[in-house]
Amino acid sequence: MEQLGGNAAIIPAAKMVTHHADCEFPFRQDSNFWYLTGFDEPDAIALFLPYKPKGAQYILFVLPKDSSLEVWNGFRWGEQGALDNFQVDIAHSVDHFQHLLADYLEGAEGIAFRIGQFDSIEKLVLKTWAEKLDKAPRTGFAPNSLFSPSLFLDSLRLRKDSWEIERMREAAKITAEAHELARQIASPGVNEKEVQAEIEKYFLQKGARGPAYGSIVASGDNACILHYTSNNSFMKDGDLLLIDAGCSLHDYYNGDVTRTFPVNGRFTYEQKALYEIVLAAQKLAIEQVVQGNDTETVHLTAVRTLVEGLIELGLLQGSLDELIESGDYSHLYMHRTGHWLGLDVHDVGAYRLGDYQVSLDPGMVLTVEPGIYISDRLPIPQGQPLIDEKWKGIGIRIEDDVLVTKTKPEVLSEKALKAVDQMEQ
Image 1 (cartoon, rainbow, N blue to C red):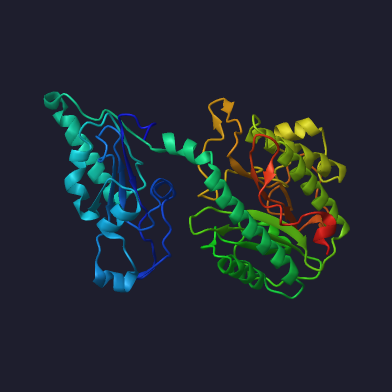
Image 2: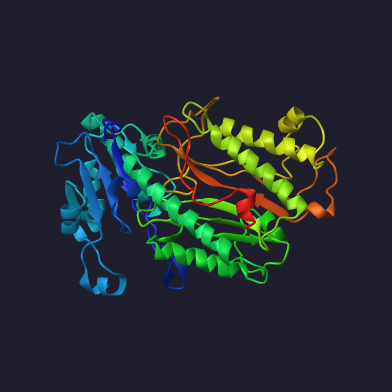
């Protein structure tokens, strides 16, 4: 509200999404709407109006109580429930939004509303704004701009407060424990789906909403497909198993952890050599997650270690600096080393502003996830060595959730083991 100043903000909730025919996906609230309201129903709309008098600054439009519909679709708070439980100033049925919006925007200097995302009310918002602009010569006043609320919300959500950090510790803890469970049940002959089922069962048993994203349980060459979610292969003796899975709590805070280990409990020489490189790169990158640094420093630290190790193994050739500059390592490591984490798995927030990298501040949470993936899927850059068959089909990624503090990094997912000897237990 302070950052809005004389502007109005219109923040819609998510809608139900059709899966097939008349069946819908489980409801997932819009993250910005949830962050501001804590209201977990579809089709609602929140107005934030700091230019209005106290008692008329936070307006919530909600689905009305309807017992006949609640029989089919479950409980609704309704207007009175919103007033009694969500600290709103005024609550209306969402049916009244089109009739009341113009009055609520009276006096606004501008409007914060995300274009292109909420089709059901976008036309109404634009129509109401246009009418106010048309009347401005007579009234002497109208909202002069329409801008994205992300201008304020991304920065707010990027820096987690103490309550949010506790929720993310919980999400990371449950996620890490599920990874430990997965390592106990994976073995040759087991299907990837069985491991996925045990992981997601554990999430639910521990009170989470479920998986934060499509769980990746990738054995053998499947691990070289970054977003592999088929999870339907049987594990083979000698395979590595890469698991990228995280839970989402009922308040939508997420974990995101990846571990890679040998299905039969023993690394081959090639697997171990590559695993040690990835682990070293991750540890050094995590050390860079400190106040005042930036995500580019974290990424380049990992890249430097990965490329150096791949040169030593003969999988790359040439000058370390030139390889990094040219990107001629990217057939073996093709993604960034991490992303922001929060209400969204790939959470909001800028990584750079123009020519400047965004500095890491206490309260930011990011993943650190270097990897190496050796397959025939990408062409080998000119001048780089052909890959011996013994290396092909090895995919390794190690990912942790890391909190920036005023001192050293806090690895929220530390309960998921990752040392070489621990992966061979």
